[in-house]
Image (cartoon, rainbow, N blue to C red; front, side, top):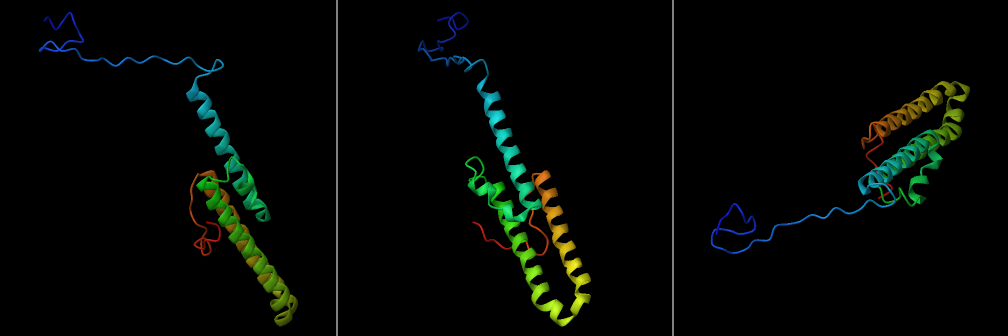
Length: 149
């Protein structure tokens, strides 16, 4: 048979199925890809907001873990773990300062406690910068510990 007239036929005369794609109508006036993209960007915005908030106020590290949209997100769990480590470090600095430094050194310990507190603050800023860059980098010196799995 003539191959030019019948696109579905092959030289030996057998028919081949040509795939047909039927476009699906968009739901409620929007295409499905734009709604999926908007949901993903909204979820990413929630993850970033919770992560930044957790670095500013480390005692709120658990917020991404209780929100349905972010609790199974690997990015939010990683940063919640880093925030918990930061909170434990901050509490350890305060307890160490109150119980030992002031008894041993006296009021001269204020400068040492101030330096340690600035160190914790710098770690929080590094964590915020990592969130803004969508990076899952561990905090220097203390980030390798895994408390939340």
